[in-house]
Amino acid sequence: MNVLEISNLSIHHRNQKIIHSLDLAIEKGDWMAVAGESGSGKTVMAASIGRLLPSELTITAGTILLNSLNLLTIKENNLRPLLGKEISYIFQDYKGAFTPFLTIGKQFNEMLKAHTGDSKKVRNERVYEALRLVGLPEERVYASYPFQLSGGQLQRAAIAMAMILEPTLLIADEPTTALDSLTAASVLKLIEKMQRKTNCAVLFITHDLRHAKKYANKIAIMHNGTIVESGLKTALFHRPEHPYTKSLLSAIPKLKSSHQERLMTADS
Ligand SMILES: Nc1ncnc2c1ncn2[C@@H]1O[C@H](COP(=O)(O)OP(=O)(O)OP(=O)(O)O)[C@@H](O)[C@H]1O
Image 1 (cartoon, helix red, strand yellow):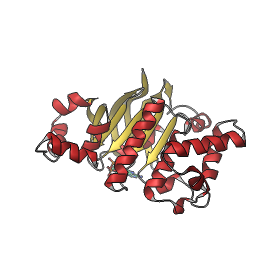
Image 2: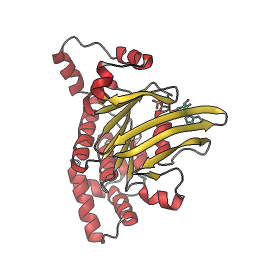
Image 3: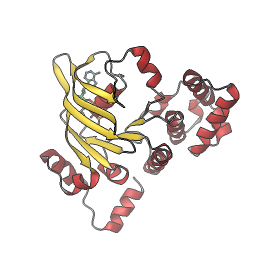
Image 4: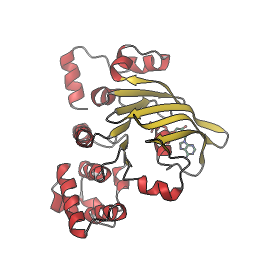
């Protein structure tokens, strides 16, 4: 069954089409990578799912179903509790995941307070466990302000926050672009671990087809505001059909041997 089903989505900026006739389906446990050139509409598409678009962009057609619930027509009051609980986001700008003036622990606590009836003691235990799970020293990070953590630590904390309520859909919009390659690899492995634990669906926006190749089971290729081709990774890599997909694949650096390929994907 599809966790997420986007059908015939169109988004405009005034008279300009940003997204048009876009279809995408993601099943439970899928890691769907969306790749495509800069400006093709990946971020706008991802933001539209949680109705997080800036006001100048308008959804002009389509449906976005999350477990059969149309996110585009439900009332704002009913949508808000789903964000964080059913749909979580991780962004490239991990600094934006946290308010600068509150400790990380306080921000986790507020999140749990908003979505659960847990007591303070239970909330604290859950926060410690969530931070431990992503490999952070829980007591120190709990008491830290965002600026006291490194980029990699902050992105780990952002992942812990995104996953603490075990959402059905995790949307990761270029989560590693701002990180060095070793930290990026560890962050992607962490998302993989969290997905295995919860069996959530992952919508992974990336520039890097090597990341898509390594982590995703399905890939969608975006071009000029729509998805031109999508399907199982193996099929798409071995038998691309759309000319744009073919040109994108041919742009991946050619690898001389499987040994070199292993080296390349190990640090990416
Ligand atoms: N707030 C906005 N107002 C007007 N146009 C916008 C706005 N946000 C995005 N766009 C336009 O929508 C198109 C898609 O942008 P989007 O950020 O989704 O691309 P992208 O594929 O995510 O690119 P990148 O890989 O560089 O992040 C672009 O032409 C962009 O200029």
